[in-house]
Image (cartoon, rainbow, N blue to C red):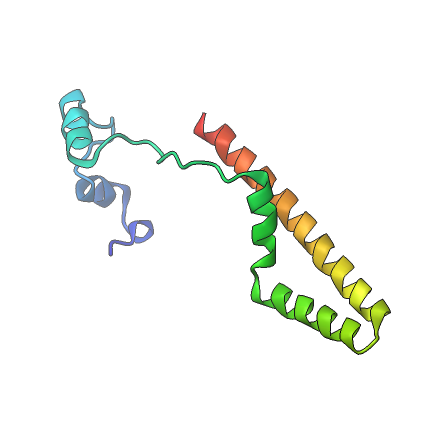
Length: 110
């Protein structure tokens, strides 16, 4: 693996087979034919409800939900409710962050 940050500018240009002024039009066409277009792969966006449900797949969240169930079974309803509130708040915050990140990525794609 080449570590470009340790190379001089001239060495980097040689390694990438380019020049300071950029690629020639013929080289651009050649590289596009070889590597494909320089575009992000478009993926089907996840629906919002699925993004929210996926917030509950984390191992620690599952443990907290099990703890809430056990707490309610032994009669500690206050503890169970507090744990569930924390889990829901975590899911809402995680959903909001993921949703905003998806929107930011969409804006960058355009």
